[in-house]
Image 1 (cartoon, rainbow, N blue to C red):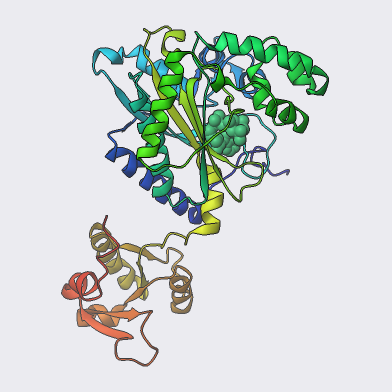
Image 2: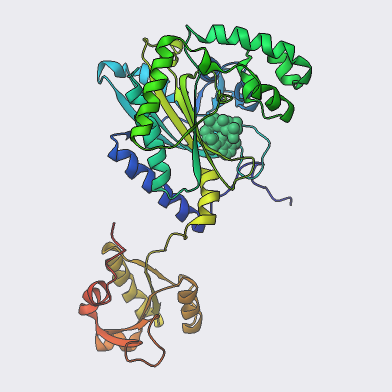
Length: 431
Ligand code: ATP
Ligand code: MG
């Protein structure tokens, strides 16, 4: 029979890899908590219209990357390709602005985009996303960029650089758009088919195109920060000052318009060295009009999302792997030994220790082999002899072969204390 395989562009995460994910997620949650951000968990499925309306009909994501299908009642559903739209949908649905003037939210989870799979680019991938809703002030932009940088620091990501741009607002962007179209039309012959087609509908997208020829055209294009209105220019100036206060280095990238249509004013990206073409690890910006676009009041906001799969690729090249917690293996002899081991193991587990035994009930030799394979720090031996004598044999797998610490007889009632205290197991086990 033909075996069933994992879907192209999607992957299983096995336990040794999951240790990396768990450590990264723990550190992110801990950092975000310190900034006052609370976790929000929204469904993976949303009405298709949510993404069409927010991300924009003319974006790559909505045009060709969404996993969209019909529900049984005929309505159109989509697996979320990003997280901000869902957070805003929820924010509006819960009239959250009536409960708090400013909302600080984050999410962590899978996103789905039907892209060409390659290293660092998958069809199911994970993001952490952070949203700050309710402030028009540059203070919010600075907080958001600082949060992003500190999240990346907390998980140990190095060699990164920060890029910054402003996309203006509904007052100044139309003027920019017009002058951009004039410029792009003059250079139309050099653009890729896709960009030529989009020239009139969504010309800013051209600046974001990855095709080499389009990039060259984009490099010579008029720069939006030269034509910002006074409000947007002042806002951008204050954001830059705040970043300087935090001694955060950045460079201005005039081409950075981001791949989603809802962005306004400040946009930013973090890129990391050593990841080839997939070097953008995080990106975000203001989305001052999105709450209104999705049917809520006029409430400004800013946020970012970071791609955790990509970040992990880089971390695994640069930082030590997470240590697995110390563990114990219980080797039993005979039916009575096995039965006595059950309660002993439960007690140790309740005390916080990782304990395994051989559920295949193999020979002593094969049990010891398993203990070794699991990297057990201690092996407890429990058989008829030990039971009669009211003690167990503890083998310290780290001790020298002939030392008197290698194999110790411990009275049953002292075992917990012996393992937890004298052998210092408690540290690194709890917490
Ligand atoms: P890219 O330019 O690499 O396509 P993007 O601008 O589409 O990225 P965003 O939508 O801003 O990405 O998402 C934020 C982050 O999520 C990206 O910086 C990246 O790290 C990650 N990301 C986006 N798409 C994928 C993917 N298909 N696989 C893995 N990570 C991804
Ligand atoms: Mg993309």
